[in-house]
Length: 187
Image (cartoon, rainbow, N blue to C red; front, side, top):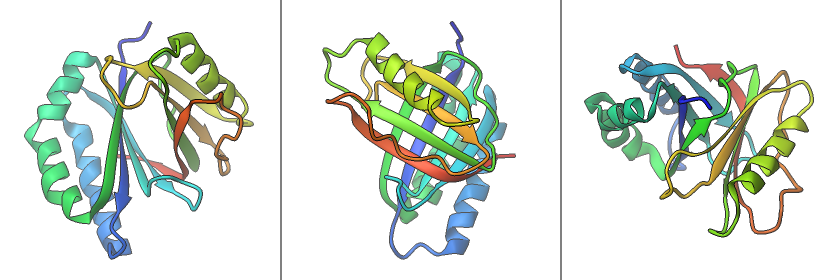
């Protein structure tokens, strides 16, 4: 199994955030890719069917690299200084990827799920993989929560040539967070 961790920040912006401020936020997020242990970064601009406006995705080498990323002064400055004034809501996920994260296509989507404690990991994995497999022509990656104390039990990422639809047929009891839209590589 891969040691690569995907860290995702889901951001809802305040109503008064301008297009320019949003662009500046993404530019500052791109600088985070230079933090030691970060392999790559990507962003997804949520379209009208998304639960958040932006998904920021960072793949890191290991859980140790994730800890370094999360405590790095640049990341903390980004969250507190750059993102906080523009935020309406923020959620995050850390998952251990089962395969490499594909580079974003012109479009991408993230699907994070929260479930009841008694849900087995294989059920989460199977549901996420079934959704990802149903996205025509997409390259995908799936991961389960890297630690036990997380809001989200798993996450799937799809990179595609066209828009990716929100899932409609996940098992009962799965709370879905979906961000899909235009995507780009950070740096």
